Amino acid sequence: MVGDWILAIAWGVTMGVKKPTEEEYRDFFRKLDRKRFLPEAIKGAAHLDAPLIIGHGQTISQPTLVLEMTMLLDMYEGCKVLEIGTGSGYQTAFLAQFADEVYTVEVYEEFSRNAETVLTEMGYDNVHYLVGNGSEGWPEHAPYERIMVTAAAGKMPDKLIEQLAPWGRMVLPYGPPSVQELLVITKDEHGNIHQKTHELVRFVEFVGEYGWHES
Ligand code: SAH
Image (cartoon, rainbow, N blue to C red; front, side, top):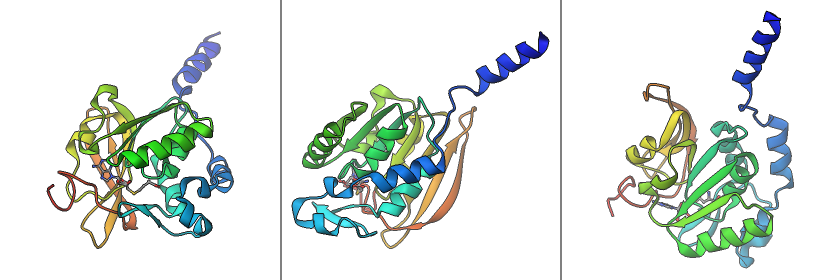
């Protein structure tokens, strides 16, 4: 009897943190057609494991890096994610697949509209799109259990960290134009911040106050 109670409590505590397996991530990655996210002229290069120019001096990230960043974000069933830098929507697809709700912010309206068209065609109705400066995050829907930043910040984006929930986790390319650290930033239950460098990467600039140049 007491044993049943303990079991029930243990189950209650662990439920709600069901996470995708590595195989599920890899399977989704293999099946996701990158061509859909590319402008007509470069669809032929979709199979390359390299970043590609999508216009406005911006790039769609390298596929294996997108997979890696997705796994680092460590999503779980029911989590709410904020993404800064919708771009082509390729990274957004991973978030939409494994999170409950995705809030994605992009400075270029054209990118946001294209991503919305592709992801809606694919059947994702859990993505919310905002055209604007992601330096502000998306306060109306905060806090977020996970935040994915896909442009490089030169300064710590404190307004985004504020929007991170306790126990939350953010993946952020952080550093100067030449090379950045891919940081995993976590917030504990007291609101303290911890950070760990995962590897070195190279991203386009996070436009605005957290960028390399104040604009
Ligand atoms: N992850 C995307 C794009 C990466 S490129 C993909 O895989 O396609 C980075 C994107 O961030 C670009 O589209 C750029 O316009 C956008 N961006 C840069 N600074 C931003 C900001 N402050 N707010 C919102 N979007 C921003």
